[in-house]
Length: 289
Image (tube, rainbow, N blue to C red; front, side, top):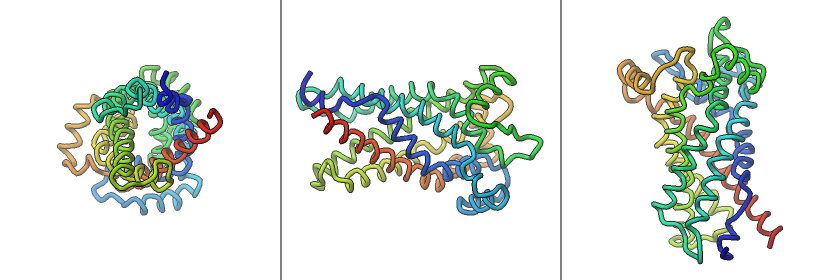
């Protein structure tokens, strides 16, 4: 094993742990995004208005409804996608050679597909718990926490319901991982080589992750909207049916509904995730140098 490969070899769970930390920051914005994506009225409220209404009608703590599911989701989905991405990258990082863009894309696409499938049950719970307060009282599920939701869904709707939306979720996970992780590595390399920024600089990590968040939000928005609606529905619906219904009744702009809260959520989430992850890697390498 080369020294360069050894340098890049870090624990599999680092990305998931960093994402769990980021979830504590981004959860209120993620909740607002889900509420906007499932809003069915003709005049949708803005992101800020949505958050104000949540606090007014449900209380300040309602902004953290479903936090346990959000953390569980990151602990499954993000652990697998980040860990798999880093391990796959190692196979293309030998003798000082850095992976090409297409190699990074292959690594991130593969990691995203596996992570999306692995984290799907937690994502179903996450969407439902975040949207519960928007439903009429008689339609609310009132899950106590993420594991209560997992058990109740399996018991009341069948275990297959935990796989609801797995198609668009895997598609979103592939797009998210490919756009977020690949673009982060590409932007970081460009900032180092073209802007002459230091590889271990906090500013480099911040700038790279902010740009990656912008790219990921735009690319993933249409799939994210469809995924959210399918998971929140009580009856099963195909991806194509959900796509066609949304396009027919609401137009193409509906696929970018919630873009602003999605970016406001994903921007800080991406920044915190990568900055914490970079710190984890730095501490690990210093401890094992």
